[in-house]
Amino acid sequence: MERNEMIKILMEKAKISYEEAEKVLIQCDWDLLDSIIYLERNGKIENDATNTIITVENENKKESEEKEKMKSGGIGEIFGRIFKFIGKVISKGNDNYFEIKKENKKPIKISLTISALLLIVAFWPVGILLVIGLFTGYKYSLTGPDICSDKVNEVLYKASESADNVKSDFKESYKG
Image (cartoon, rainbow, N blue to C red; front, side):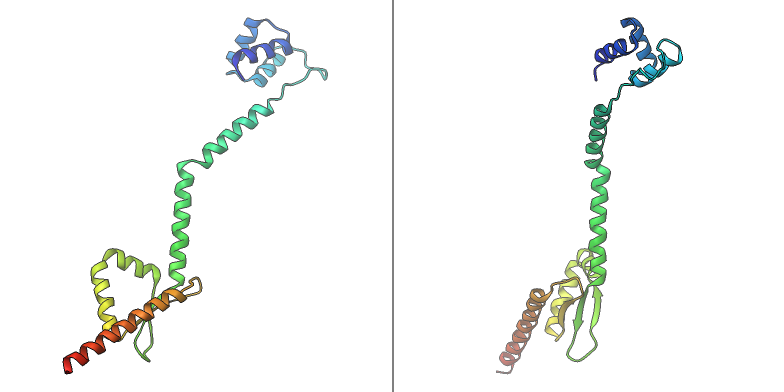
């Protein structure tokens, strides 16, 4: 609400002059309700049941909606959502495993979170070790409750089969 409108409303409700309404509003930091209460306490307005108090619900609603919009689009909420997402990813990574096994031996299970960190930190050494592992008979798979790993495990199985084929072809060509 503009200041002139507030002055006019206070003039109508309190039946005071323009200058007096402006002076009271300035003293009350342009708060209309506080101005009316101030005038009632100083005896300028009669405080009886017939007087009405102005409700500024629409203005308050608009202000609260604007605050909500600013709050919902704030950088704090964005960071909160990002950290929440990262937390969910880490939690799922800790519940699911990258499994390394060789023939009938007990498999080695490494959480996907640790596996991803190893790949990020030491991509080349880990990648080379995985390829060497394929050629020495190790098989890789993903296991866990939160993973639809059928297609991924199929690809990993085909990779180990291909490594076995390359290894057997190399042995045959070496013998021949």
